[in-house]
Image 1 (cartoon, one colour):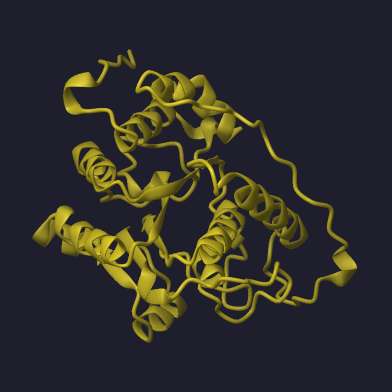
Image 2: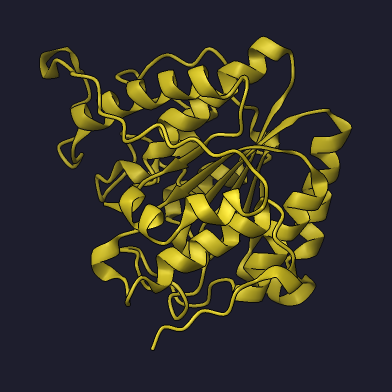
Length: 288
């Protein structure tokens, strides 16, 4: 129901009012998957074959749309990014450009199907798109993204196995302590400079739990101490100013946990900032 919540919150009108031509191509469906062909034996995994099916479907959709437009992938579970980002990366390979990813999230999502204790595959996308081992059941990656092309901002809940894996790599990490000390602009600017210097394509994956749950409660993985409304809008405004963003995920919205559509509206407003809405153009919203 996440995509419909964004529609109800007016995402199409918000972008159209900024002068963009918007096409809603509707909801996707997962490919059918033969469970007997999947080899992972981790008994903790939930919905492996459904997630493989979604990954195949989303990857194909990304490859079809991304060459000519800026696709926005709307969903609930962050496992959506297994397909969206792998498809986007294939387009970058075809154009000869490096693919970069900005991961706005409380979590690093760097588990593999073999290391996850919870079994939830929404904790695995970054490991998959960077070509880590353990994803043999998923579509083969034709364009794994170098770990140095990943930037995570907003981290405040990272499991031990993920922490050990990330410490051995060169992923750009900005947890909330760093943001508290230096502000959110400094790590973002440094990453955007690298993207621009490489003439890269930039995918942004925005998780609801990047935000503090006091302003965005509609997520099943809340972690206190997240980004404020102004910090989040500043990120979106800087991204727009950069002119580098080529695709976007809006994920982990659970309408059943929302407060009168509050979270969906905040996410739509952030998307509008990314797509060019300025401070003076913002509407006043009432949640009374």
